[in-house]
Length: 182
Image 1 (cartoon, rainbow, N blue to C red):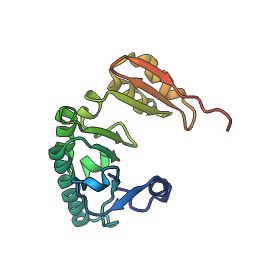
Image 2: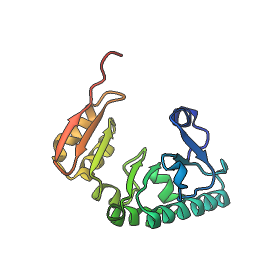
Image 3: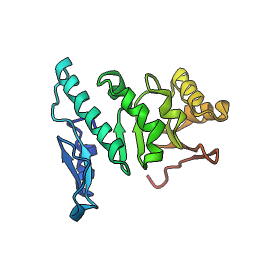
Image 4: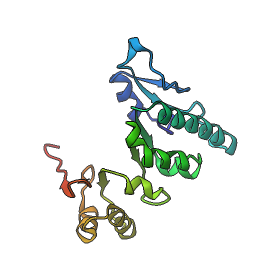
């Protein structure tokens, strides 16, 4: 699920990998196309209140359908926008709380560590945190991991561009990426 309609850097590679960009979501995949990949994209690029309400209705319906059908991977790009502007926080929280038992995986991303339901962090099994030079934001990101906050904050503050800190919350292991050969 993506909210950025005009993002060829994102959608071009998805299409090249066989994803189908659609404006309406049908969670039931016909038997003869079980391997079909779908990325749900809202129809309108308008940012007015009415357009946001329509996007919210579409996402809400898709989230409920995914939950009801089960065995899906839902990738929500820009959770902050989806929760704050599209008002689908309760549906996302239900997926984070109960989705795992229904075979639903949720991969969520956000630009900022604020205005995101705590379920996104509390129920997460894997975290990927990118560098942020803002001490307040780095501190907030470290707090949300629930692990070695002082170390996590220090690593986040020192990460170069395109590198990240990976945290496996089940094993409590932290790994730092390293860009080589650039």
